[in-house]
Length: 281
Ligand code: SAM
Image (cartoon, rainbow, N blue to C red; front, side, top):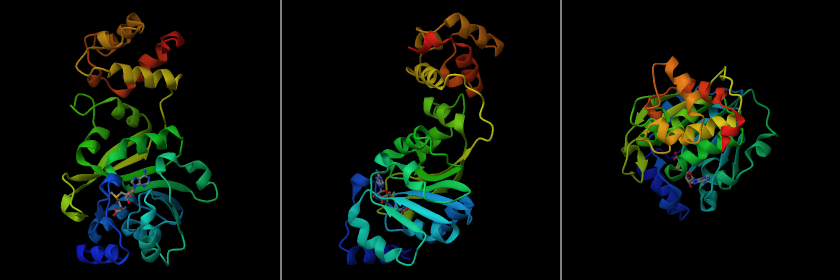
């Protein structure tokens, strides 16, 4: 493979390929980083890996050695020639040239047999959050995701109650996954070098999801509770049954002057499970 700035540039030039900022193309050029990501992901020959954005195939090449199969989604069709060269011997790799956000992933992975489904990717930064949300909303049953993201976005993903980065997205993600940082990545390992540092974050499916009686209501409650971050629950949740909410908060020594950023996911679940259907809208 082409794990050096010079070799990567030669490869791209040979195929007349120009890196595109609009697609968030920052390719990894450090073999050790790729090895570290792959080792941290702990992939084996029972694993189907979904990769979003193979780029020149640097990560894909090593994923294919560990995984049973790799299915990649690449939006940029001008990478075809490059990928045909770098992945030519890799029979367990399928590349779908499509916008991942528009892909019918469930349909496309039906033909594969596997025991574990992982997402492993160096995500295009301009759509990191929509990609993660799509995976959840499309009900793609991933066991684990190991993704490289911009450091500040990663901090939001793994934020805990009381921290400045805790948001409705952190609660949403923490409902489904145990989220933790695996690696810090310097901006120097990319071509071209981005302005920001990155981290590799692991999302591991929670084994026993807490029961939520009405998911729609639960997620709406969370979104509303964080609507204006500096405001109290009393202000953000005016349309809800505040008496009921106060009753639950009291059990945890809070009152309605609390802000959403202080509450754990379990408290949100308990509130949602005690609200009636009419609080939905
Ligand atoms: N995996 C390669 C690496 O680590 O060197 C490339 C990573 S680069 C940060 C992101 C890749 O995602 C690019 O190849 C880009 O073209 C692709 N991409 C951007 N938007 C996409 C989308 N909506 N669907 C699929 N791929 C996309």
